[in-house]
Length: 165
Image (cartoon, rainbow, N blue to C red; front, side, top):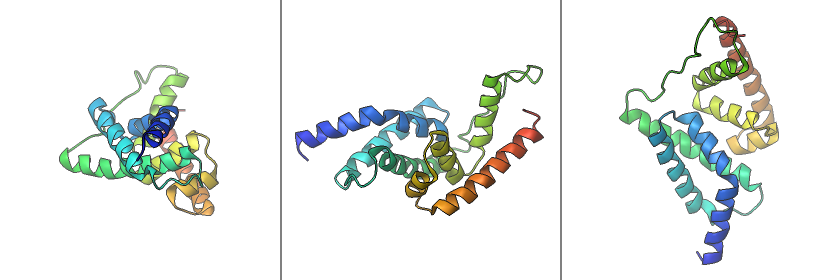
């Protein structure tokens, strides 16, 4: 590829690097694992960049690559380590469940979801439409809606079960 293409790519990655960071943080708590995943996502995006035709938004296309790479990378790392997921617990059950505590608890529950459910929730929390989520995940809009309803019910049940709300 020529220098212009490389400069375009670097510029696009710089503009949209928050997407990669979000995916990395969703799948890994350990900084080294996140850094490895960030590099792997960037590499896979570069390898695929020549196929980007601009039919979708770059951010949507990047999410698709990032999530697919994260899922693959997660499986690989998981086989190498017995446990990747670290526990984070709200500071105290006696606290009045501040917004921050609820946020931590919610992300703890999200962390327990399947890889596909995590991906859908991440896109949803980033205000992607069901249409865009379906495009990234390779599923129908109707399937996205069904999965989101199930995910919301599952999270609500877990939060109520743990008396977090």
